[in-house]
Image (cartoon, rainbow, N blue to C red; front, side, top):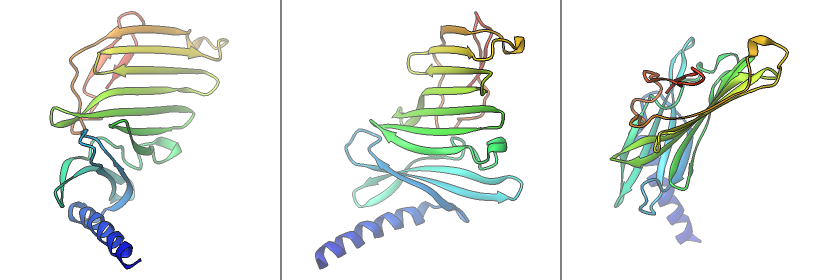
Length: 211
């Protein structure tokens, strides 16, 4: 029993030290996730921090991916641009849903809005020494009116856009649409995410995509 206790204390102690060593000043931990992200079968530690700004702006967010090399934790990558702040979700409040790891892919989800709602899912893979965005699923619309879905595979460049109209009696809702388009060569990572500087206009539907 004593051996087990000492082992747990050692593991938890190293984990807590890893958090405190790199934790931004004044921040609090929002979420901690463990999982293998670089394919070496050794779990990385992903920590999301809430960083208070002011009452009007709420909390900014910093995500850190820590890698254990030997007995020492190092920062594999960190960013304050990949997760939205606590006041960025509109009437529905904090838009941050969660961060998960599945099959070596880092997944970040957001959801927000009011009568007009939106959802956003980013998928990152560790490659070229960075966590690069390989997929984005964005959804937006109004309940009982219409819903738009844009599924963008950045690895292949394929974009699948669909619009489903529920209330067809209102002409402002338009009509059902679908379009496939390929746009290759876009490089986005944790560092430059959410700057919305990249704009794509689909040739058939003229739908605007900001990524």
